[in-house]
Image (cartoon, rainbow, N blue to C red; front, side, top):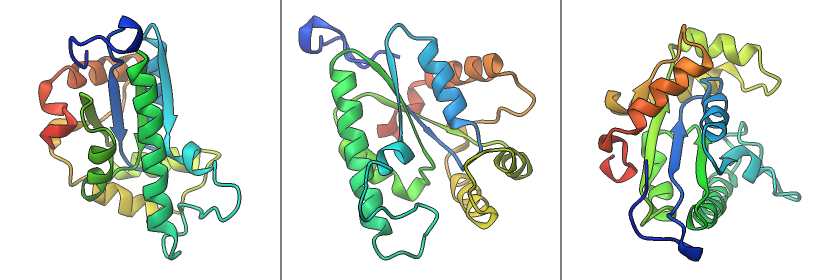
Length: 189
């Protein structure tokens, strides 16, 4: 999963970029960390972590009715993209995770323009996602997880992996195989 043959700053090849989409509790962060550990140099960027950098005026992403929610999401995506670009241009591979429903990909496309980004959707069945979510420290209300799952089900099935019944190593192998497919390029949405 090399971006291209053009050296980045310092003569390095640009870092690979993997964007993981899926509902809360799908296993995106677990897979992102496993993918990063399997690389020589890698960073994990989580949209939620970038959002939490807002100290005053923070809008909780679970508060979907807040009028500032869309603007804060767009600002967080833009900041995440700048961070991803900085790492990638220095030859550091980057895994990014976000819920990322299909209708929201435009903000990511704009911010990552010019990079060869692979998009993979982690989408176990809803009952599995809900059970995983119930066991997490980070609580996302069930109605939001159900909506996220329904929205993420709109992605083309060729981008989707289901990790049910797999170890992290098996899930990583499935992720690597899928991400190697040129059809997972974000520009091929």
